[in-house]
Length: 294
Image (cartoon, rainbow, N blue to C red; front, top):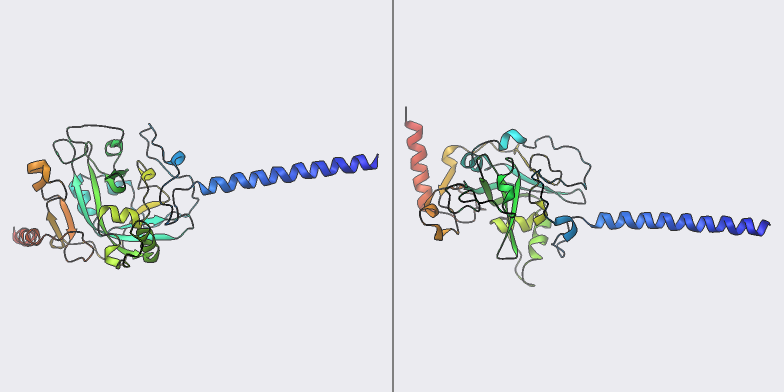
């Protein structure tokens, strides 16, 4: 009789241990299904990165965190596309990783895509697709799209039907070693080490350096816990004469729309992807004229 009771207790103990181990394994597997990955594993898990039909901004569910005090809120994004593209300059893009560390870069170059009549925009003529849905969502929605099948670009929607701003270049501020590793994972083995100014000096480069994955598409930059914008407490907002207006890059096939001076960058910043000397002279002359007008 005692032996039978002892076997029953042992069986219950084994069942409880198995249940606990199963729970731990489940939690571990759930933790591993995170879109923030190591430099050698840059792609998101497909289950978590699938697009959804809802027009509500996507939000990560992986973080419980203290709200950043300098985060830019919804009212910042509620402005026309060209105004927002200029307002982004000097702001800090922050990427919080799964381990709690943060990567930071100051925005130094943007491009405005107005939608509607703007033939160079993905939403030209009001065309709405599964890919460009974020452009028609509320201002501050992230729009991430692939180019050449392997690279990504990050945009942010603004006021205006189908309008969004492309983030072209950042000046790295924090986490450069991690950025360098993330960039190296996509480069040929044995390639030279990148300088700081080369880490984020292009739209796809900044997505690699900050590990911005495709599944960030349709997230809300005003509330997401993994990526957000901040004011830079160490610098003053750029003055009009500090901002260069130049034609956008890579849209030469769109005729007159390729000539619109809707690329904006900070004059003299070494992290700008492409410097346009002619545009710099013209922009400086225009800002000086505006400053003396009554």
